Image (cartoon, rainbow, N blue to C red):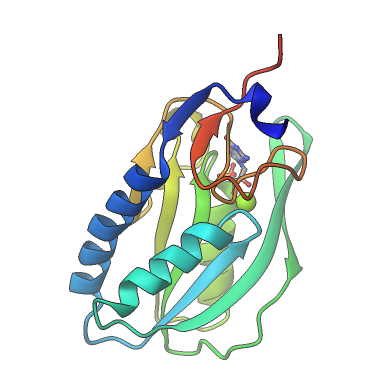
Length: 179
Ligand code: 5GP
Ligand code: MG
């Protein structure tokens, strides 16, 4: 059974849904009269992104939806390099963009994403992450919208994987080795 090694649920389905509702109220207030392009960083953000967009609809926000696939490689420990594996096609010239990721960890992915989106002509770039691990930060970056701050644990579920598995779990859990 796949869930045998998960014994520490951090955020249940209900808790995530409640937090998203609060987050979306905040986002809707800030972005009411703007034409927004929302860009999800795949694959980790897919579930969070869908729930966010659906909740935003109920607050009268109708963004253009885009996705990009990015991956951070750390060939050596000290030098993580972020790569765009799949570009998006929407013209974002002059647009107010909100980029959505699963976790803000070292900050390399979001730092790269912000610069990349500005280079592609965005008027502004805001950031939204489901989880924030402030302890792990290498680049001085804070997200504009944060679901939950967590300690330095490896987490899975609700889009987040371990070696490709567990993305489908509706909750977020710590992964602990089987004993
Ligand atoms: P950063 O570029 O901020 O170091 O890394 C962000 C990316 O690292 C996330 O988008 C995610 O893919 C991965 N990541 C960081 N911490 C975790 C974690 O606890 N669990 C999982 N599944 N991925 C993580
Ligand atoms: Mg990621």
